Image 1 (tube, helix red, strand yellow):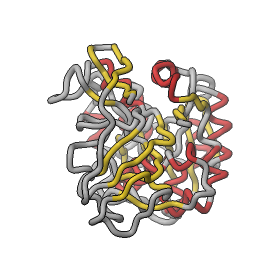
Image 2 (cartoon, one colour; image 1 turned 30 degrees about the vertical axis):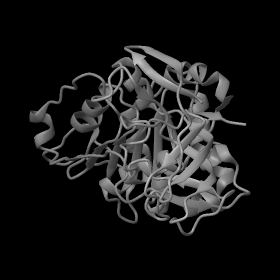
Image 3 (cartoon, rainbow, N blue to C red; image 1 turned 180 degrees about the horizontal axis):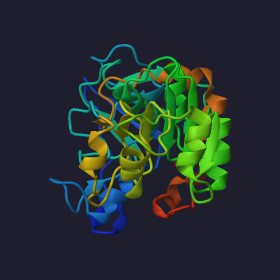
Length: 335
């Protein structure tokens, strides 16, 4: 079968490999859609992920159809549509350094258990939307790490799906910050209350208008009344802008974006704000927590997808997704 793999730094290629086979305890999946993640570009730039440098299979946002069920597996039938916990496979993280990747025609789930690696979804939800389950779990974990409370005011840097996660936690007001007008328009469609184009507006002043004045005797100047800032963009200026220049006393700054270079923070300025800094990686518990919401509101989630390319154009899809400003969310679809 065909599979897309990182074969060298900045080099993704088609590779012919054996189609996997399922044993009595296993399930064979036919991949029907796979989203492209920003980390795919990170893996490609670095030539793979240890210990699989030079041979890293790509693709960790799958939607799949069950095509073979081992005799020892219960709760699944051939033809079922499923989402996958890509961090729960026994042969490593799917598409993130493990033995398999979802930019392949087939994937086998060894020692398969419904509720551990797999969950069945209704067949009327489009494949490309089902493939959003993994990134939405990442988004919800980032939200959970910032521990929002009802009534909190939130700023998300990067116009992606994070705001939907905050909506599930009942916050009062969400502002999305980006520099692309098209992305900001989409953010309003999927749940933001307001947007700011930071290339054209005074970010701090606009946040004071939206979230109130958060200045105190220790934190003087233009300080927004924002409770939570989340960096989902990865621009080097964001942590320092939010942490040192805008945050009120007691605010939280969460980092879910991948920063490719070191970021400098002024601890002297941050000290007076008593800022809480948290980090978010993956989805320890959230992978199937988001599934019901996607199923119930799939039309809203479909808005997130900007580009759909067939599997035979997967290399093009990877290039498109890694080009700044070229696409919002790219999904590869399979026949």
